[in-house]
Image (cartoon, rainbow, N blue to C red; front, top):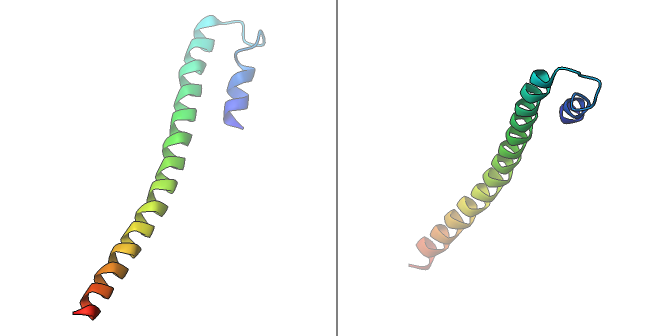
Length: 65
């Protein structure tokens, strides 16, 4: 929603070009923050799965000896 509100500010609704310029950086910041949060969620899930598989492998190896 915040990105959509930023896009409204790129229209002729805002006549000040400096305000549009600053709003462009704010829009880029919001998109980057969203991307980082989503990649963090994906990465943490993958890391937990890898950790579980490693612990399972280590437990099987300990039982086979």
